[in-house]
Image 1 (cartoon, helix red, strand yellow):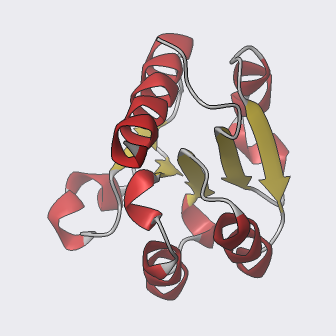
Image 2 (cartoon, helix red, strand yellow):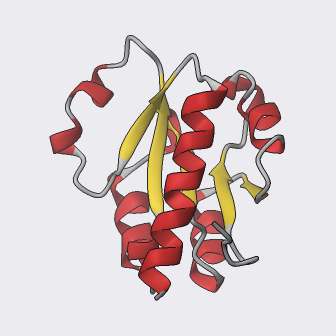
Length: 129
């Protein structure tokens, strides 16, 4: 399956070392990865060109940021996930996070990440049609 060249992953992670290998896993994916430090930078980047996948660190997520990401043009093409810890209670109650598509629970595996990236890219491609 061939996807448009504008497909990219947006990572909101000012302290990338906290994501324990996510950056190196993402480098193996055949998509561009844009890393931003702040919610405002993420919103600006996504507003210019919606990514296929947005990954937020758990401590950076806020309902306001997530809601603003979901309100940008073509936000329905984005998959939005939060990276969280195994012992974090937030991923257990996904129904309390309606604007979030899912949670990546550490430790992350390359198989899960690759599957997520390709699913997000397919979602963006299908919604463009």
